Image (cartoon, helix red, strand yellow):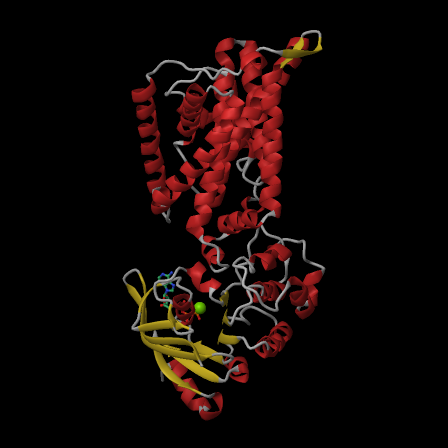
Length: 232
Length: 290
Ligand SMILES: Nc1ncnc2c1ncn2[C@@H]1O[C@H](COP(=O)(O)OP(=O)(O)OP(=O)(O)O)[C@@H](O)[C@H]1O
Ligand SMILES: [Mg+2]
């Protein structure tokens, strides 16, 4: 079943157009990687899905319902969660409050504080410190936990590994299969192409706001990906 | 000596009222970065609304709160969602101009309807009753009651901010509005509720001010100034900061008045400036302002 369907998406920052006629599909339970060079439009794609950027499209639907003119808060309440670039924890909230606020829209589901602490035991002892007092890896864990707390059907991850030590990146990527096992669909935006290809069922490669290549990782050769990525 | 102590104690009590002015202003600025120039006029408006309620129903000013508080809550929500939300953005100027306009409109409407005459909300014997602490220090029951209510309200707000779902939404929105939206927080509604809560405080402050002193349609701007000074003194890190700010302002004004009656407000402004220079972010800064 198609969870997310996008046809002919244009996205804008004022006069600047960041996405051009973009098509995108995601099935329930599917994991898709979105890769591309800096400025290719990956973050903009995620923002368009969550209603955070000015965009027009022929179709922008989630579970068959149009979300084109919906407020971000409504889209989140429908079951879409974001782990934003740079984690974006709330500095005035403790780690635990950052997690709790993820459940603000009150969607029922299997995720709870207790389960997030089981997934990321490191957070349990740091539950009452401000989110900003954490290491980068712990911040990313909190941001993921915060997204899970909304019991989403779809999580959008923006730059999961950026700025993290390799051992931490490995730890973070180990939880993706756990989340997938819950039946949650995922879009993983990633600079680290190899990581992205490992977890993804399909890949979208963006180049200067356009779709350059898409397919299953096994069907795409390295050369084709490199060509789509760098535009050579 | 005892006279000075008396001045300080009276100042502390007045400070409770200032803290109430300030708390409403601080919430609005904290949650949505809106400097509400009409804040003082809304206090005066609330006093007039209470006056109308009291005159038409004959109830006591304290009882009039049953009607005035919900009215101001609703008024605040509608004002925010109907007008002020549209002025908020990256530019700080539009909300400033619009609330300035609202301030003028309120002043003129009140002047038109109620004239420039001074008014008073009559609360009966409580207005003049007092207890003697020691020889030379008498505490008015009314200022004492106002102070206690102010402290209780500020404690309640502090707990509300730190423990409740809405409080977390306020803080998250204040920290990072766009990420807060990604948590499913409806920003327009949260802003509406913040203004509604602010105007409930305004209503309480307006009724107390109406009982304690004379008021007229032109009183708003100085109340705004006191509120503003108390907020800056206290900082935006905690509701206790606004209480401290109000108390410091009240004490400074009373000590100034003790030295020379003409110095009352000047002393308050000086205390404000001194703290602004020494601690630009106030006594209780937000952690991220440091
Ligand atoms: N707020 C903004 N205002 C104006 N232009 C923007 C804004 N955000 C992004 N852009 C532009 O839109 C284009 C796409 O940006 P986007 O952030 O989506 O890229 P990205 O693929 O996520 O890049 P990165 O790998 O650096 O995160 C870029 O040219 C960028 O400069
Ligand atoms: Mg990006």
